[in-house]
Image (cartoon, one colour):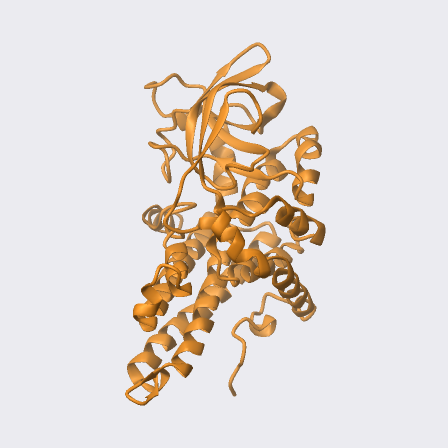
Amino acid sequence: MRRDDPGDPDHTDFLAADHGGFRTRIRDLLDSLVSPNAEDWENERRISRSGWRSLGESGLLSLAHAGPCFLHSAIFLEELGGLGFGGIRASVAVHAYMASSYLHLFGTEEQRQRYLPGARQGRLIAALALTESTAGSDLRDLVTRAHPTEHGYRVTGEKLYVANGSQADFLITLATSRPPGDGNGLSAASLLVVDADADGVSRHPEPMLGWHSADMCRVRLTDVDVGADRLVGRPDRALLHLVQALDFERLVAGMLAVGGVRHCLALLRAFVREHRVKGVPLGTHQAVRHRIAELESSYELVRHYGYRAAWLQANGRLDTHTASVLKLRATELAVTAAQTCLQFHGARGYAADAVAARLYRDAMAGPIAGGASELLRDLVYETK
């Protein structure tokens, strides 16, 4: 018996029957709110403010980060990834899950009340400012400094690859209290909420190969005064918070990549049915069929593992090993699927404005952002 839709909600043991109706609603919302605007947002290099408000009004920015309802988030993330626009999915995920998760997990009640209602409504846009020129997947060489003052901190440094950077209203920012050159900056690091309109904050677009609609920016912080009430979690203990939050981020990235693989496979299947080589459809050639079969089988396994990871998160049991395996395998499979899609499309896939080319450009960011694959392989080995 042939299964028509590999994204069938009954496909995994970790979802209940009522999740199917939720998936349908999510697809309908994304088809009406995102798909008609996606090309414009790609060209504008960011999601429009009106787009953010529409997403907020629809409830898509208010889904759960934990508990049984997190499985709704997992479905949303897969469907968001399945739209085929890596920049949009990165932008929304950073806002609704990655940056906001620090406030959900470690923020004070005052911080949550100040920022989260607006973020859920799409009125306030969140960004995550962690990466620096010397601190990426390995944050030990962090140099952005939070100098203690009478009323809080004075922050100076430069953050790179900040998604939502030009429009962000607040930035969850990692900074160290150690002076430059004084050992491991991460060992005395803190997380701060920096209001993006504060004096000393400047933002500069940072064009990327892919993720065009993610609004990537370089953010400079020059003697930015941040009140003590904007400290997220414990002072000088950001490492403890990062360990927990990064597992969640890798789960999010993995589910987005699962959706991206599904989108690539759908495009591939349609193309090999229609495109003819030697007088017959491309998909009748054994080499092509076997290549797609390899991708399909890997997709089935990774998707099942993704929902297992989501189930663990829903039950408060997500661990570093599971999150790392999912992010590693899902993002690398997304690259393989996109590369195959481009290859089978031939010259038309290599055109700069081709869908296959965009999918490949976007997929290549996955094994880099949120923890490079090389680091994740170490984590997978060390946490077993």
